[in-house]
Amino acid sequence: MYITTTIPYVNARPHLGHALELVQGDVLARHHRRRGEPVRFQTGTDDNSLKNVLAAEAEGVPVRELVDRNAAAFEGLRRPLDLSFDAFIRTSSHPGHRAGVERIWAATEHDLYQRHYEGLYCVGCEQFYPEGPCPDGHEAPLQRVSEENWFFRLSRYQDALLELIRGGRLRIEPAARRNEVLAFVEAGLDDISISRSAARARGWGIPVPGDPGQVVYVWWDALANYVTALEGDDYRRWWVAEGRKVHLVGKGVIRFHAVYWPAMLLSAGKPLPTGIFVHDYLTVGGRKISKSSGDAADPAALVDAYGVDAVRWWLLREVPRVGDADFTAERLIGRADEDLANGLGNLVNRVVTMVHRFLDGHVPPAGEPLVEVSGAVHEALAEFDFRRAAVAVWAIVEEANKYVERTRPWRQTRADQEVSLGTLVHACRELAGQLEPFLPTAAARVAAAVSGERLPSPEPLFRRLAGSSGAG
Image 1 (cartoon, helix red, strand yellow):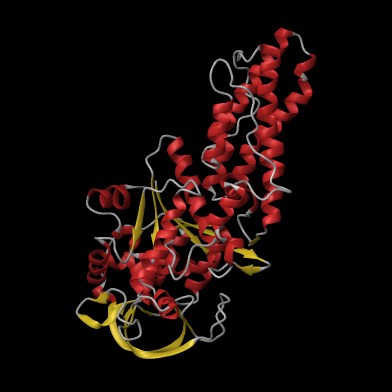
Image 2: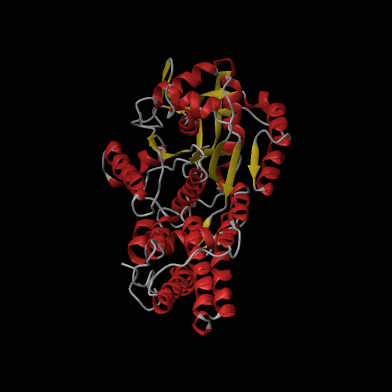
């Protein structure tokens, strides 16, 4: 399975919305690896945006300095967020990216032409709109741009795209987003501008082949990363031969990924992705999180304050499949304390304590499983429903706690204690395995707490965050 995230602009440091998509991709990658399936999980940064140029100008630093610094912050999320990506591509420095973009340009040349264009441009979205204000909420006024550009005959691919989406060859989840794309395509497709003047781009970006006065439009450049990062055997393995190629994207960029990108590939004669999984926005105070939201939405700062388990669990347990999710530190703390400290942590500590108290720490044979959740977890993730998958894993915690109250091992005979505690230790071990894709650090602690023929002494797995200065 080839799993990719979008590649964000690096005009500023990452925010929690970026972390959401990275963690979702990580869960999918870990889940399928755990099932023994080959996986490539790829992410990266879009270095060639005009937004990056303008941010560098505002800061008074060279573009390369700003891009390198902020791209490092995105790549640096690997450690605090426990990410397991296999590849990280930067479009300004990856050795094969420019050549790959040029190859796609050449392969689509029969669908390219030049003409004068005039329209309203949102730098925040890096796209043109027929009128203002920006529908995505960027406050800066739209800029009127008039220039000679290269265009792509998107209109030529309307029928082919409709057939792909209606027939399910290009799967878009959830259904509401699929219907949104279908409505957009059915309304008629106009040809799109795919270059801008080198002067307006301040000379930053990939020059149009044979036309150095133009640079390749940032989205055409960025979308190509899904294949330009694959070289030689990797391209054949993960793009040509792989039957599952999934893009994780935010709802604001669905048109680029579900319309423009497949049309580019059709024009170039290349294989298409098989799935586009769309998430909605994270908000703070009802407003979409942006790079200017500060530490309240800085994923590294949140992990430093509350711990990786609390941050990942909020993103997976609280964010719905459809609809925006409003973030507050209080909600993160409440969910972590309720589920991780009081639920999971208390269960494991209780089981280990009873095994030491009644069986001198020795683990009896495993009993019958309390609940089977692997099928429900897999089904939920196949539907791109991370919250439902997290709830399915949590069924083990709930069933184990019910089992403790039902059997009351402290009132049982030794023989019955061996049966009930064997069942509970087995449940905790199964929980560690099922939890690993979601909370790899916590899962490792749970696994260590219930490992071996004689369990380690009980220790708290999580501390309560409410009333503390953070998880440290």
